[in-house]
Image 1 (tube, one colour):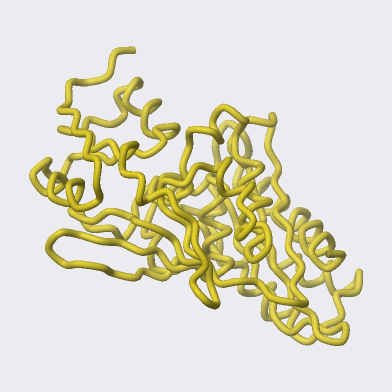
Image 2 (image 1 turned 60 degrees about the vertical axis):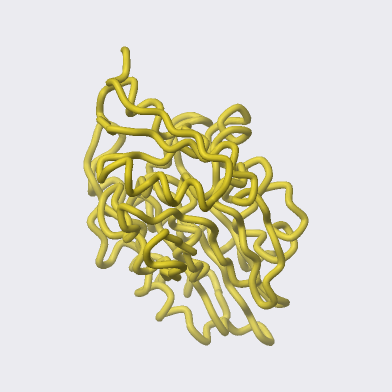
Amino acid sequence: MIPPTFDYLRPTTLDEALRMLPDAGEDAKVLAGGQSLMPLLRLRLAYPDALVDLDRVDELRAIRDDGDAIVIGATATHHQVMHDPLVREHAPLVARATATVADPAVRHRGTFGGSLAHADPAGDLPAVALALDAVMLARSASGGDREIPARDFFVDWMTTALEPDELLTGVRVPKLGAGWGFHYEKFHRTAQAWAIVGVACAVRRVQGAVEDVRIGLTNMGATPVRATAVEERLGGSTLSDGTLREASAYAGEGTEPPSDLHGSSEYRSHLVQVLTRRALNAASAR
């Protein structure tokens, strides 16, 4: 299907992009990798007045060390993120989850920040960002820089806290130090499909007991959600089979899973318990 007519803007610097965005109007769309936006355009599910293409803004691709965190540039590709030494060393959960995104062709074009800004609750990376307490870095020409915690960034279905004149410039991800185990467990119909349910999990144990646990859920509501009921029940435990089974039964508490062609709400509520137990088992084994 032919997409609707729109103006095409292609800045070469971040400052130029920030100047263009307000003039493009509230209905303008930002094009990063385009792996989520282009299908919406072809199906006429999006009607932007203008597209601001960030492909030539090289300064948004960098991944750098930031002390107790790493900063991943918004237009770093999935392929770049999953193979980057800093990510693999300090944010291995990000690398593992990114490796499950779609297929190699998509991972070579799709971008880390684009996936987060798209805010599809079935996407893999929003739940990971939430579980790791990541911070989104935004900038506008009028308001300067702004930091948005992941818990406040995802507002509703495919809706974020970004203002119309703001760009996501990067994501600050806290480093996982010694003692952390991690895993991303995903259930989908085919290797390239969206997750029916996904679970991002990071566990830190001290002398065998759980000191900290973080669990983010994919496709269990209009936004990614934290499995806080499970996290609370696992604090101080030894992650025995009985403890995991009991705690995982609360994985769906407070969630509103959708019903669609791929599964009912009740099916997802059952599936998230199974996947949470698997993710915790795998994370504790690491």
